[in-house]
Image 1 (cartoon, rainbow, N blue to C red):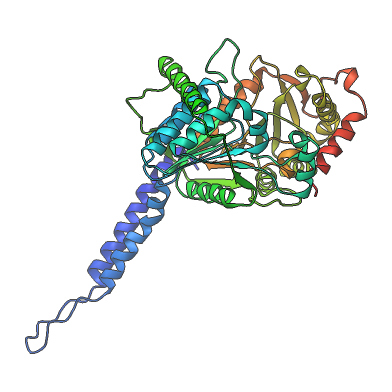
Image 2 (image 1 turned 120 degrees about the vertical axis):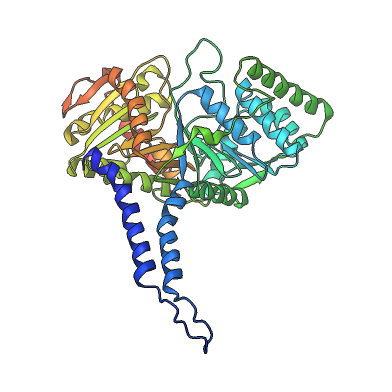
Length: 479
């Protein structure tokens, strides 16, 4: 359909509605008969039915107007959006995060939570237990200060038998279920994506990780709220206990105040003004919020199956940017189905040989073993080798849908972690995301292109331990 024809569609719609309205008004409304011996007859109800039908035609348009979304590409705009969502909240604040580290960005955001809690706004903070365990000593004073300010704090700790045994053996950081979702909700607007609450890209000479968040309203926010409340009330989460002493409390207060001062001086936050975050959004066709269940599920997670269904349904192109690429059978099948549909599949991921050591080498070995299979499937692969690592977990499907998630393409995200994904049906935002990924894709190292293997793996990684590592990760998903 041409551009002119698309522009005429609304005019044709309104003309048709006006014609139906006038026709019913002129020809199908009973006129009263002048007979003073009887009570005056009432107007036929067809007129009322017509008015009701006329307005009913517009209800979908008004309902869709409530669906709004936007994309946050830089760490500055993402942090500002989170600040504004929290500051303008009057009824409820829910925040879920995987990693909270004692740096300026994270601590200053927590100070905003403390302020709202002291003002009487119900405020809940849900953190990952494994990540918190790692930084428990550093974060104790800050979390104590938040709790003293009125912030409710709980941590996600898996209660499966396997997880308990792993914790007892000191292996919880390797094979435990983790809360990997990063969601900030203030009243009826939310921010979600791949960014953790830290300084990446905000401070210091080192470039921050490339990442993307989504900000959205509508039914997807209701779904996100229900998900976080389900997690909050589940047996998998538990309250955090702290040593109650004044010295630690004062120390925690000083940490967040200093961090907030730096963020203010850097111009990232303005304590005297809060912008309306709705200005960062635009009306869109639909927003979906994919999430996992609070309880452990054997087999692929709901988020994984939702993403696989989206990829498998592509007809023209699947463009994926992901921090990790260690495909499970479900994603191999999804990308294979997309190829059968005639869609081009382009993948962009980190070159993990830049981060050698320990399990990283095993994962890298497993990953490079997929080179030839990708070539055989006709799937293109490029490796991101910039100084700033690739942390974005996003996709564009057929140039019409934008996917912003916390989901790494690896077994841990599919079988263990609690993940989320925001799916936005809007061509303009999908094209914006495609341009963002395309800039990195265009400068990335070609590995597999048009069915041909261009780059061979380093010799030291051509070992069988890669396959062993892959199956070990798959076994992590079973209980």
